[in-house]
Image 1 (tube, rainbow, N blue to C red):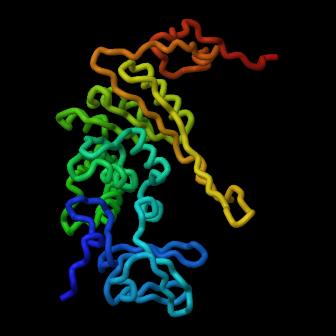
Image 2: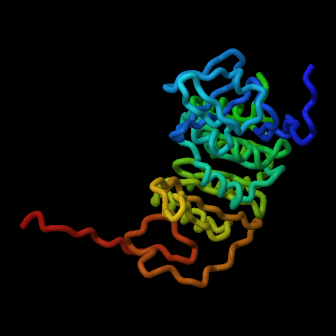
Length: 330
């Protein structure tokens, strides 16, 4: 019988549902191997199995029972660094149904939408489960994440990925997760109670604003994740025109790595550029309106070429300009 691990090396309690493990690598855990060229390989440790690559093979038994952070050499002399995958590493390499929310955006959603332990969060849609993992870790086992997904095949991919990351026992799932197949606009009113945060990762989040307003507690936050400038404009203007939210805050983030070797210090050649725009706004109390902006819109901002939602203090145009062009009869 093996000796129990010291307290500072004992595993993270299973009831924390952190997706993190401490101590020696165990059978059934996933590991991430990085070769000398930076290529990554993720797989589950199974006693008696082998990992094969163009550099030969490695026995899983060589890794089971060792503390992560070591180097192993394959049968053909290839060297691999062995660690457990971090959440940000897991989500960019996991199986995908829909595109994933990248770690740089997931981190800002968790921070700037203020996702906290015990929060009641609604997510639409679940996609491949990347953002779901970050939300579940943030709310903990005592919070609630309700994910709406329209497509059954995407929901199944998300379910497998979330179960894998959190090492869910057979037949079990994260106690804070409720995955529902269906439309947020129809499902949100049926939840039976208000929620603290709503995250919208969908094509037309502006069509959900009324349902979100009804579901959010006063002071709650809505956060929209959209890919294009036209989507960005539509969701910002719809939130602004609704009148029951604070002034929407739109932004995007760009991440650039750096090359540092002695005196050679310069920006790296790789960069995570545009992935999506994020928009946040807070719910006002029932019947309350935010103060009017003192800064006037730029001339022409809501001119004849603008056809989207208008803030309450911006009058609609009475005259639609005539479209002119070349005289075809000339």
